[in-house]
Length: 222
Image 1: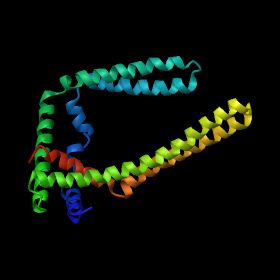
Image 2 (image 1 turned 180 degrees about the horizontal axis):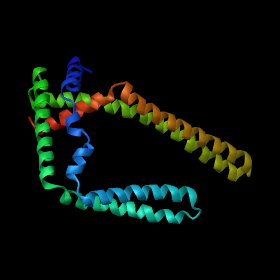
Image 3 (image 1 turned 90 degrees about the vertical axis):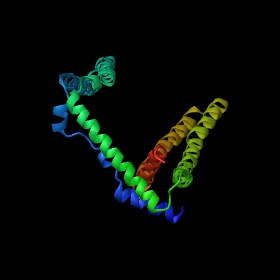
Image 4 (image 1 turned 90 degrees about the horizontal axis):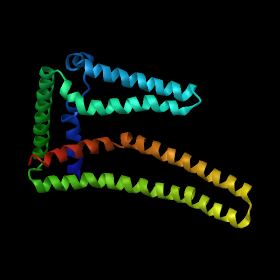
């Protein structure tokens, strides 16, 4: 990676946080924005989720779980299709104007950072974007190789063991071996996933993702 890339990434992180664009609504804002429709749907989803957990644990016939699950699905569809229509219009307009204002300020900040680092054309911006994408390509390749090796060991070997079982009729021994390989594979997959999550934060990949998001926004700005 070039020094310019790390300079831009650092400045984007320090000066153009996406916090204002991704911030959560406060309860006070929700009270102003939401109408009875939203509170009813929200309450139904929470109650249905609690009911689903209780039924799944306490009731032998798991088919009863389908009732709260169905309610959750219906509420989710209603929210997606009707929520915008039932917002408090005045508060929603204020919120959207605030988001638009924060977005424009974000774009101006990113553009100034890029220009101050000599990235003042679409071509240069694309070069920086390619560098950023290469970071994720290398990361995905590394974990793809690990996953393929684990798959080969935990799936390929057990399948071969099962074929050997059919030929030799030594079912007990082979079945235990296959189960052991599958268990080891599950543990390894879990460790790989955990490692991927940890390195995303400890190695600063989230900063690269923040930079990539900014550059993708600039595709519409230059």
